[in-house]
Length: 130
View 1 (cartoon, rainbow, N blue to C red):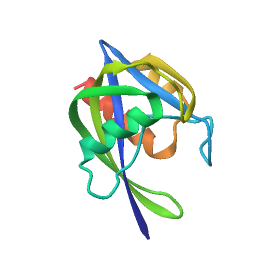
View 2 (view 1 turned 30 degrees about the vertical axis):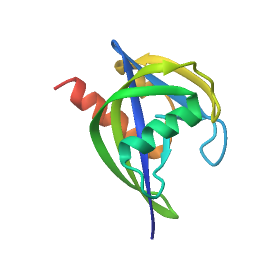
View 3 (view 1 turned 90 degrees about the vertical axis):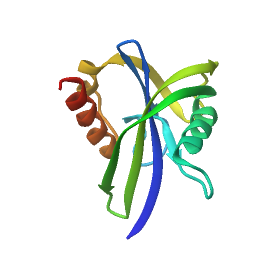
């Protein structure tokens, strides 16, 4: 089975988390943590900074690895490296999404998530309520 490696940003600001809604593809109008594929020669952190700049026109810093999700979709295996981070610059522009919002951790389960991101939500809830 084909393996795809991606990175995802859990962007935090005080007690809120930034979530985005996909505007295209099989999972259009489902919520996700922004990010994307790691390109050849990039570190996970470099890929995440590039993807957030491309998708949202934002700069991020203070990247801290939260979890790595392994998820089997019907046609490929996804390995998703998830980092908690903060915005440090840029002006928000939705280039790959049709909505975005800041929500509390308690609100995360209320949204319809892209399948692999459900595991990230569960990990966030577990780590928050330890």
